[in-house]
Length: 185
Image (cartoon, rainbow, N blue to C red; front, side, top):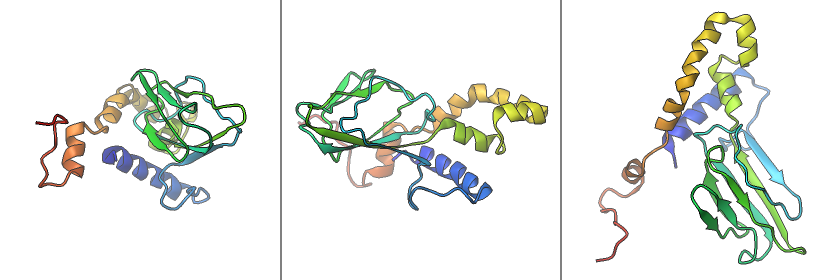
């Protein structure tokens, strides 16, 4: 859905898997290196940002369980002022490092579980640093470590990978269909 982010992440992570053959994907077709299963019977997230996730990537959040989505389990995205009904079997992709998100509790005798996929920013930096952690680079290779000043501008590169709405329309809308303005005439 965000092809530039997807291709960059996939390429970077493939380098990691080639570098260390003992690492394996969670699923063959999955590009996300990390997955969390939240099996607490009434899982609820307090408002937070996932600061360790790569900011240009989207975290996949899936809800499951037995609960009334009209009464609880709503997803809240603070900055966008969104309160989203999020029933079991729902999936959403959000830039969890950038947006404060949480969910509302479900009833006492109800069950809400979640399943998330994410990309830690440190994992991508590890590959970009030649498979070395930053503190090791400082000790072992001052030359490479000093090049890390470029990381201060990394956000521009990462931000540029996020497609605009016009780019997404040109990629995914059939070529013979004129996009609707959303206003009926």
